[in-house]
Length: 250
Image (cartoon, rainbow, N blue to C red):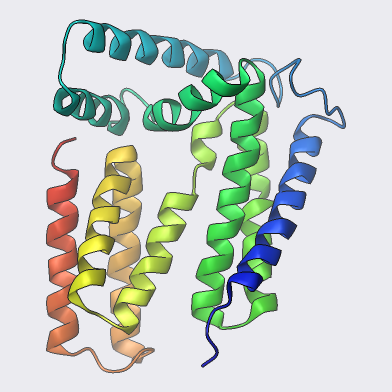
């Protein structure tokens, strides 16, 4: 089996970056003056998420100014961002806030859209490469994730949070690698990644659980990657336990 080359990843990333700019242009309706307006149609859920963004910044700033420690701040971010009732605020804290500091509004929002689309495409490429072992097939997987009509529609309606798919895709990629060659190190970091992805959004955790169960069931029945050994089962159980522990703060 040929080793994965960084040059392949570079050219794939370059293609996806260019196509990400293309999708960026489509959402802007042919207007590259992205610093003058928010991408997508006005209205819908965009105003609600701008309000949430303002609220979470005020909340975290107040907590920090009151002398809250770093541990409490991390816990507050996890709790505020994971439950559906408060919405997906974690991406506002980890992506929107730093980008706004650098680019200002509304340009940060549009850069965020382009960044999410590109990361979706790159993670789709990695997953396709791991499963298909074919560059062209993997690139198609990346293009499907980047130019997904679902994502384009959601951004157009102001629901950018619904397009942050790359954490789930990266988990699928990492889990497939773990299943093919299980060891303690991979079990540990895949479990931690799964737990942190669940912290980002509760529904992400539920999606990862469904994928894990279906993948293990199909791989076990059809023996896609060999027989289901006791060693492999032990590492998968360890991964699940670490994932639960990593998600406990939320």
